[in-house]
Image 1 (cartoon, rainbow, N blue to C red):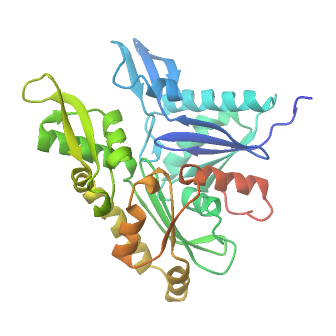
Image 2 (cartoon, rainbow, N blue to C red; image 1 turned 30 degrees about the vertical axis):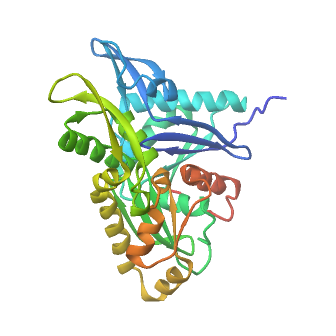
Length: 337
């Protein structure tokens, strides 16, 4: 029998990826937050979504542009974001075989403004009968199985594509939070700028991301790694290639990593003394795609003298945490808004 009543959905509307969790089922969609658009005068006509659109990055013909409608954790292009969310939600609903619109809970950065909240609600409301929001840091903490309902402090650092959310949580409430509008995308941009400045080689976003994932690190132990990089020479204009070391990439992203460490230090300094002991004993948890940067946990641990653990599935921590709120609504009531 088809499920006639829609099951609730949780959405992690990320700068890099969009994930959707169906209550009682689990993650039903994980796609890059990318749309390929063809322009017909003032009209925007979608050509491809998600992974298909991302594969077209830097390879599109004239008249077609690959767009990332979510930047630094918030909607930058309202119209395209609405198209993308409508497509992803329709796809998720087809998988659940439901005829009715679901209730939806969406993870948002802690520093989001009321205008940005309104934009997210408006972009989803056509595909949902009710839209609620949850702080991404809170959702990530729940997804990491931290004891957020207890009278003890938990420190979560969620490093996404566009933002890094840091929060101290106790008794289902956020004691202190800060959102830094830097993350994986800032690291990619730093690598692009480094290659242009140091080697006079122009590379694209996809190549920079591949370099970060392959030889990028935050600790000197990984400096010996090497990778051949292809791009366009800025001096000759011809295609060129060279071998880049892990040390160079670590130096390229060091400013971004330093900003994140400084934000974590700020959170520790603003934590009430009664809760500082809890954090010292339990350490901090890393979530988000940025947590996968090699050696980042060791770098933070050495800089701040604190134990660091990485979520079991960092990329899915936010949507899994929001999904747990749906699965256990009585336990986590009043967390979303």
